[in-house]
Structure formats: structure tokens, C-alpha cells
Length: 144
Image 1 (cartoon, rainbow, N blue to C red):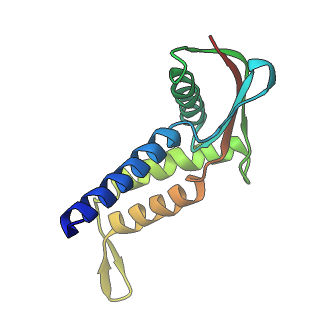
Image 2 (cartoon, helix red, strand yellow):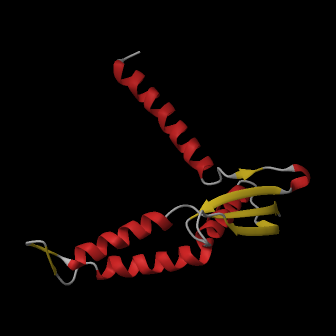
Image 3 (tube, rainbow, N blue to C red):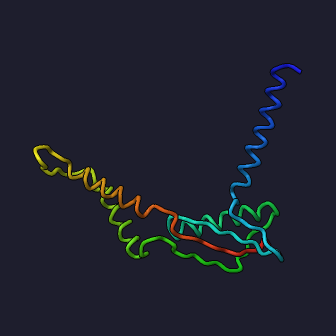
């Protein structure tokens, strides 16, 4: 067997493994259940993201069988470390601070500091504080 043939066949095996893995990755959070009821649990940065991801994974899972998901029940919960209302307020304020972060200047201790940089930094800190996957979407579905 030539060196080229050996590398080519190895490459085909590697590509097969990559494609096989990536096709499964689209529904990695789906747990097949008994009596045809499957479960998907996904965490997301916000409620819509968690729910959309769970629905997408259920759809991809059912596509294997040329079917569509029929949702039996679904629940999305906030599971963050700070109060949900506070989290949402901090997230909105930090987004605004990051957007406004490029303007203005403030004098400080013999040097000139850009107020926008300070504001932008505060916005970044706020995004880090509220950037976790704090929402969990838990859905049961049947492929039909």
C-alpha cells in the first residue's frame, strides 16, 4: 500500500468520525425515553435562547425518523444566583453602558481618563455577571 493510499484512507475515517459526531451534536441533550416520550433539557443565557435550543434539538432528533416533535409538556425556569428581576436590570444597563462606552472624558489624578472607557468597562463587568446560562428549558416530546 502506498503512503498516499494509507493517508487517504486515514483521512476518510477521520472525516467520517467528524461528520458522525457533528450530526449527533445537534441533539446532544435529548434523552430517548420510554413509551416514545423523549426529554430534552437545555440551559441558555435567556429564556428564549434556552427554549429555541431545546426545540431545535428535538426537531433534529425527530428528523432522523422523518418525523416532527409533538411537545407533551415544557417548562423553562430561571436558576441564576441573583434575583431574576435584578439580573435583567443589570443586563440591560450593562448593554447600554457598553454601547455608550466610547464617548466623553473625565479628568482624574493628573491624567486624563476616558469616561467612555470606564462606562464600557462597567458594562463589560455587568455582562460577565449576567452572562451565564441561567435559564433551563425542560421539554418532553414525541416524534410523530
